[in-house]
Image (cartoon, rainbow, N blue to C red; front, top):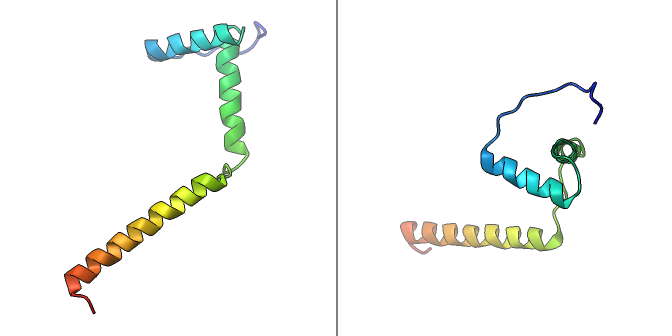
Length: 83
């Protein structure tokens, strides 16, 4: 990072700072470079639009929704008597 870049003071929880320091050591970056890299990655995901859902997650979601629909229909039948 160049010294002429704008500076920003930021208050973050101590535990989060420790996690960032650990991550910066693992990635062999300065704390500032680690934070910048993570912010850039986060913003890149935002500008890329919605993330795709893999098939397994989609199937799990569909099964969950189907189960809730079946449960709601069963409860409705119990309230109104089976027809």
